[in-house]
Image (cartoon, rainbow, N blue to C red; front, side, top):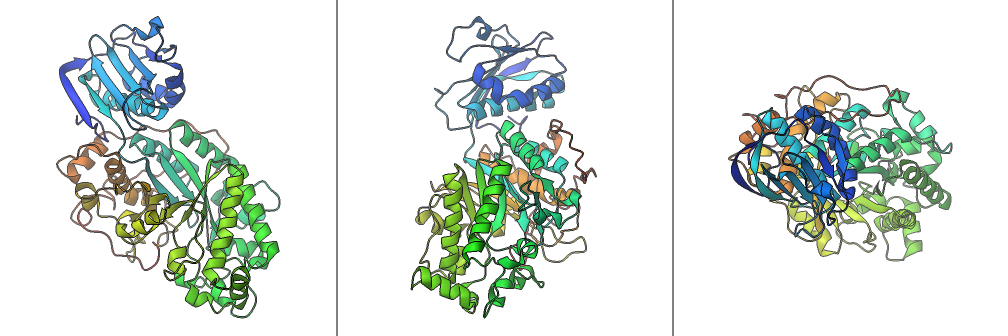
Length: 533
């Protein structure tokens, strides 16, 4: 079946096409009705039909509304289906009309979205008759956007969430803080000054982020906000200088130049002082409460390595006060575990980056709480096994293959994934501890460029990664796949609540831009960056 992407795992064509009659209805059982609501206006636009909604009883009822005339579109929730989470069945025929059954609400959504794709591809010529089954191959399929280093307009973020769902993705991590900016305007007066360092149109009111999180939930995309602690904290320590180290050897913890390649002070928060630890816990509690997301990412990456931090007398002494065998990284791990416990006690799932195993030189005395899910970013995919072998759940983002770090327009360091290799050769790990993958989009080298500039670099790698995570049949090659993607562009997202938020970037994206497949990008990754990007 070539008419939708990602393609279905199985499809038995029956020949001919079904034209929906003018009086076709959208018949939904109770569970499906909520799951597919965002698709209804898109489906009406694609078919040109009013498609009145008919709410039927449960999937196993004998409600006459489920015994529909030919030509209706029926969507129901059937947990008895022998399919993985997110799976669905689809049948299109003259006698039954269009029948979608999802094993769960997400499956009902993906099934009706496939009908929507067929309607958009049919251009009024009718839907292909046949029957099939489909399901995602990997539970977590997503992306991360670097909102800390650069501002992305809320309008773009909303479009991006719709694109993720359109391509079968179900996760978006928002990296909201970094050394140069704290982008969340918290209402709590104790922390309002963090974002006040920025122009108002370069930060996000907590309400705008809540709306994006809620919009993602409607589309079965988990939007995960991130606050990066206790390192990458220059913007935080600039607002609150008392959080910086001050004792002998303090520069070892304060200096972030190894990560930014530029003078960067106040990099790692001084966690040796009780008042600092309390302030950070209160900040994290306010962040989690105001954004109201089920999952919160707490960063936890790129503090200095033990060999460097051994010069920081206060941190060495504090580590040894916790355990005589501890080194500085162990003390920072213990503090991260305090943050994990704080969020867990508030009913949140917690995630953080891998890093402590690097900073500790491979000798871990203190371990990150295994309740936390690790966003693992080893250079190569083989590095993921370290975390699953030690009992962690992982969302993987191998730096060499799953990072997009656009170079500056004039050239220079950057990273563009090899989309040919990803599409034609890459296979996601089948380790049970690897719950999924995400494409990491970083702004280290192009912080002043537009949303459109970044979109031109990320759109094709994103489509390829999500297609392979869904796991349907491959096409003949990556060019054929990308042609199919361009032939069926995603629908526009529903309108966001009007908050008068400035800063929307409305410039069009050039589909032949730097993320395209051609002699320069189809077969080779861009030059490796020297830092995380």
